[in-house]
Image 1 (cartoon, rainbow, N blue to C red):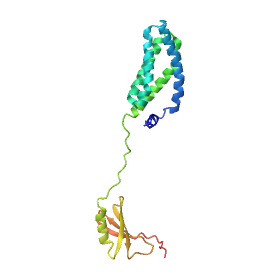
Image 2: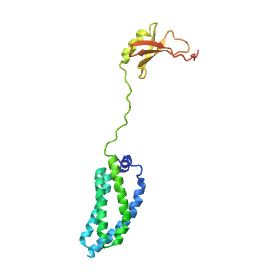
Image 3: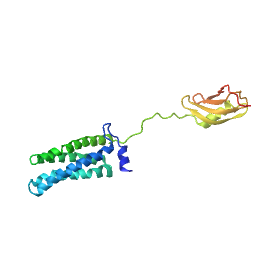
Image 4: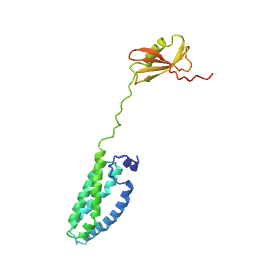
Length: 218
């Protein structure tokens, strides 16, 4: 299944943003990430920052990079949820670590932090909503006849077709628990379309003339 179509089939909360919004938002954030994270690596390379500060930034980039393969490649919501939790944790760790040294880097990444918090809540919600497979709605089954059509036909022929004629294919009415057979009777009344009706509970038959008053054409 196409990954986009797969994502569309997931149950999502009513407050989930439209899919087309993610692209522009991440484009802007990636520009901020490239500038600020790149500057952190530059300062660490120049030994103007402790080397251990770069670890949360590196981990954050790794967790960011593997989210799409996990969510859309493997189509695994649980792994994607775990990944985005680690993404959020390493981002908080990174901003706390850099704040005493380069405050502007922490501040410029606040939009990134807010978006990841929102995305984390969204991903966890989607994951929880789709943990259980969807089941078809429960519907009341159509009652079945306890009398076979063959048995009902035998009763109809013995009761309704005494003076000759024939009956057509049977139709079962589950509401009245009756079998209906169109009856071509020799004694057909004008404007009537008789049926032989078999009651499955009493095992008796009677003729329903179904008279409409409309005479057949001469």
